[in-house]
Length: 342
Image 1 (cartoon, rainbow, N blue to C red):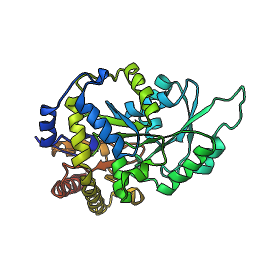
Image 2 (tube, rainbow, N blue to C red):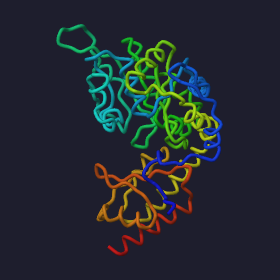
Image 3 (tube, rainbow, N blue to C red):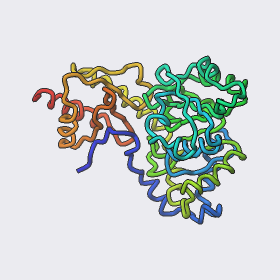
């Protein structure tokens, strides 16, 4: 059975062009720097986001944690939002890998207050204080919202005042640029390092990119080996990443439009309340009421539809390249069918 999968945009299967590129990839041992396809991907990715260098890593979590390890020393403090991916969905890796303290701030739907950041920075040397080493922001945010460029510029000013680097978790970086209708370099220009995924929405089967200046990436390359990310003939998967970056970014606008259509159709169901303020990218968050969500998940699975159950009172459907409007209509029909039988 071919499933309609709304769990995430990580579920996208690779395209025919990706499969061919992987078959034809010119490969070598990447730890020795001999994999020509991986080298090409890293050069292309760095130029695309306006950074000097880039490094290919297995996943987004790997890239974020590699960034923390590279920017910080053990016991340093990182300022970031309490609802960001690094805090909520990376298994406490910052404590295990980088050995840093996360100083979390309350965000406004993912957007951090520059004033709160400045207040939180450790400004004086004190025997009792850890050192503030890094500020992390997320754009697009995993709550479905895109953070304004103005907010990012204001955080940059604070960071410069106290000589602090900024890392951007840009897992869905190109979704943010698409929503803002700007070149992606406008999103990355105010950060020192950026991680972005090739396997979220862009259809690559594996991999993410960490980009920054030459010194940062050279240091990260050694730490990538330490973390077990030193790959060998990685060009086999890097080839799909090149296709993702060169050919698939323009499709994200369609993914966003499909999400808006999905939200509109879901809103016709009385038991569903859409978070309309979070409809920036390809995610539709909604609050179910009077729905046995575990039974709904099972019912839809039987109908060939995969969804995730409720988390923190909300459900999330995610559109992507392989979701059509016809698929959406079928999902809505199936949900209404289930609710009619409750």
